[in-house]
Amino acid sequence: MRITMIGSGYVGLVSGACFSDFGHDVICVDKDASKIAALEAGKMPIFEPGLDKLVETNVAAGRLTFTTDLKSAVAGADAVFIAVGTPSRRGDGHADLSYVFAASKEIAEAVTGPIVIVTKSTVPVGTGDKVEEIMAEANTGHEIAVVSNPEFLREGAAIGDFKRPDRIVIGTEDERAMQVMRDVYRPLHLNHSPILFTGRRTSELIKYAANAFLATKITFINEIADLCEAVGANVQDVSRGIGLDNRIGSKFLHAGPGYGGSCFPKDTLALLKTSEDYDTPVHIVEAVVRVNDNRKRAMGRKVIKALGGIGSDGVKGKTVAMLGLTFKPNTDDMRDAPSLSIVQSLIDAGVKVQAHDPEGMEPAKAMMPDITYCGDAYEAVAGADAVVIVTEWDVYRALDLKRVAAAMNAPVMVDLRNIYPPSDVERAGFAYSSIGR
Ligand code: UDX
Image (tube, rainbow, N blue to C red; front, top):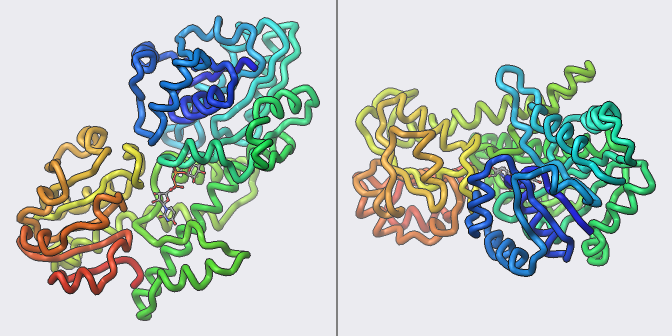
């Protein structure tokens, strides 16, 4: 099969590389010439474990190529995937579909035969209909089907998620498009990954409903964690105790500083906008968005309290070491990371911040220029009045706690990811606080 991927960002690149690894012939397109040049030279624009090797192998095998020339890439393709960005529109939180529509118009001009156009980008309900209108207006004379095929990739685990998905969702009622999509995903189907065919609007909504549900699960356990702190219960045991019920399931019940990243914040907001447009409120998701925003700010107050301050008083001139800045481990993504809110409230309170992150310091420097960036965790804790674990990178899981305590001005630890057993930290001489226990 010949597959064209429009957009060589996170989703496009991972999907394109994985499709080529299945044996398909894949061309990844991007408007950014420097990105394409870098990819051709084997340099990845994002940090994703295993991606560089996958790209290298498939480029060497001649199955994966890159180009800025959309027209020649679309000519003769069996399927064209649209994997361009759909950021939150400034001002109103709606998904910005201008890149999707621009790509659709360019595709319409480049089509040379029967083709299936697949939206992989996360797009609001009804976007497929609009793409179909664009194709109809272009009057290409060719048979064109527009399909929705949302991705469910987690950053840091994207290749595994692509190759061993819980399910593949395909929104189309067109018989020919169904067959093309079956061929595209045949290797996964042979691996017994279920393929769910639905209507196109249903498929578009599945993506938002899935992310909103996961965001709800996290936010639920975060509020239960607060309640645990108030009543003297342990949230990790509560998670285990409820998660063993198969109807609930144990995943996404880790209490923490609130969800961040490129998907949950954006997709929950976009779902709210859709619900407003159709005058059908989703009150639960409204609450999730509000509670999660408040939580990130509350984490800053939690650190200030651990420093001995009340509100933002009494901590001016103190130093906090932050370990982990990205919204989760194994990524360099800083988008909507809780660290951003925490750093802001510390700086507002006159606290100095020394930070370390294994992959995220370059993007973080642009977003938080007023903090000090350190070479490792031990450098970050030197002379600090408190250390805060913000992201659960593996390198922070087995710190030499005695060495950390000795390097600090005061041994205070705030563990926002519950990666340490309280007794271990307290034995090393720390005043320790964590989440919901
Ligand atoms: C998510 C979805 O998992 C994926 O299916 C979708 O396509 C894109 O959005 P991602 O944003 O990469 O993926 O990360 P994920 O691992 O889901 O974590 C999202 C956020 O939730 C992170 O900030 C993480 O720290 C937080 N989280 C996750 C928790 O706080 N507790 C949990 O139990 C799980």
